[in-house]
Image 1 (spheres, helix red, strand yellow):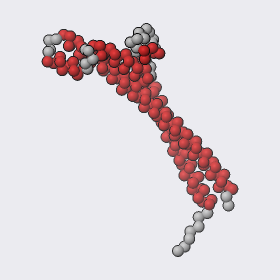
Image 2 (tube, rainbow, N blue to C red; image 1 turned 120 degrees about the vertical axis):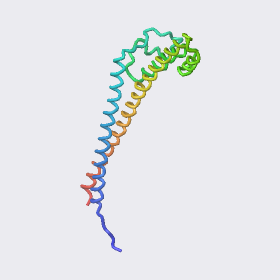
Image 3 (tube, one colour; image 1 turned 30 degrees about the horizontal axis):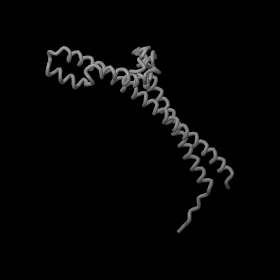
Image 4 (cartoon, rainbow, N blue to C red; image 1 turned 30 degrees about the vertical axis):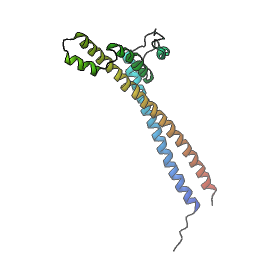
Length: 178
């Protein structure tokens, strides 16, 4: 059986090449992830700002202890969208029909179509739950996707930096190995 002899410089050259490719891929993924995250967050901020939704400037601290830090502020990011949807709209929805949901009130309204109270509650719950769902889905969820994309970008860019350092070390090693 013939032994093949591979010299150390060839191994180093292959590892440097693989490291260079890995660095380029990680860098590209990091840049694209950062762009995607920024796109999502900018889109959410622009859409929410255009809606001109503001927290009331005076919120009862006993009823809204969790929203005090947002008093008077515009809903312009995903965190505020979630707080407004759950903490403000959600509490109002609970008061409309004794905590019943739109689907529950709608079923009752179908059974009693002449009941104006049920009809009004149904309309208010539909509007409130729709706005709440939009704020949570389009505002909070996409904002969170943007945050996750930024985290992935940081991890990818850190990986690219480490790989670049290893490539540089490999080049020096290759130069001094006989």
